[in-house]
Image 1 (cartoon, one colour):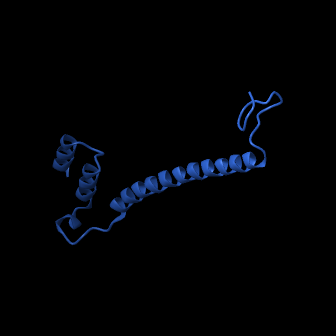
Image 2 (tube, helix red, strand yellow):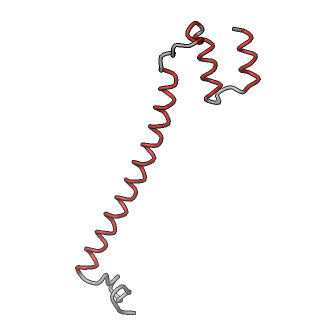
Length: 95
């Protein structure tokens, strides 16, 4: 079979120099897509971890929980889903 993109008996006929250029551009495009996906995933993961870190390092607001930092930490853990309601209520009684 012969033609622009067929097997010509000696190897693949890639359409001459334009075949090389288009192949190189395709490779660059695929590399750019992979890098883009990696960057998007890293940004999303970084936002999530930064959001959790801010919850843990935010200074207490002027409210009733200032006097009881242990209760505030317990409330944060409950809000983040690290503990369930049952455990939250049991530990709150212990404070």
